[in-house]
Image (spheres, rainbow, N blue to C red):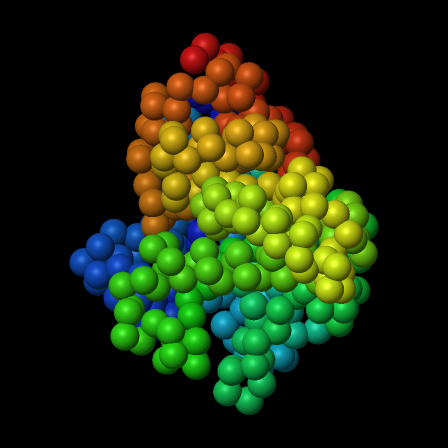
Amino acid sequence: MKGKITLEEAYMTPEMFAREAANNKGLYASPTYSKKWDKRIVDIAGERLKTMEKHGCGYTVLSLTVPGIQGIHEQKEAEAEATKTNDWIANEIKDHRDKLGAFACLSMHDAKQAGEELRRCVTKYGFHGALLNDFQHAGKDGSDYLYYDQPAFDPFWQVVQELDVPVYLHPAAPADYMFEKQYKERKYLIGPPLSFANGVSLHLLGMISNGVFDRFPKLKVIVGHLGEHIPFDFWRINHWFEDIEKPNGMVAKKTLAEYFNENIWVTTSGHFSSATLNYCIDQLGADRILFSVDSPYETYRDGCTWFDDHTQLGLGDKIKIGRSNAKALLKIGDYVDHDAPVTK
């Protein structure tokens, strides 16, 4: 299928790579494997564009990889780094806007400032929203964690709703006492095997149960990896929300399914399983699912070959998931192969 859109595709600036790469080697994968993405993580419009074309991807939305700005605990440094990085990626993609877009990276120390930077990126550069690498590290040593489900972040969500752009809630690695208590003795569960889904599902369910979507009913949030395990626990979560928790004062006013039907989208990033995709379509509907790869940690070859040749979707659902859902959600105009015919 030509004209696919992908939107969980990572980058680092060369400066960040030099500073951060050594810290992350061996955290999610062996150094031997991680070498495969070292070069690709700083590539913006070189080999990346060739690979996209080879595998039928017409448009890619780039986002700053983990830990990104959320890993910077000092507020002024984080805010300056976010602005600098957004300016850098805007310049890198400016001659390829028919193929490349970007999500803003943001410091989340101050909700008002985060909203202002997002507004600047959307209005000045045409960014498609923001991607946040889970909670914001704060405090003297970074061990204070800022979650965005608290009323203090309402000024930020107000701007997001006003701009009518989505926020991608992306995982980050466990750190500090979370690492020491939970993952130090079971480090092979860090990242895609478990910790990523645990972190984001906690944050997203916090946003639901603490009423963020009730205060901002038109808010749009994206999560990757086919919903970070939440769709597979739908009945159980909703049973406790509806039958037990809400009578005890939970803020959320709607059912879990209603929030996913009205406010939340999931992507296929790094989760290339037809059985799982079919389950999520049954639970959420094809309108709420977006194709993505999770490059360079996963390959366009694996993700696109799976989607194109092995999903056995109906034509309508393939077009929705492959491109039209994302095109509408992200307000993407004409791009390479945006109207290419799809026959299977």
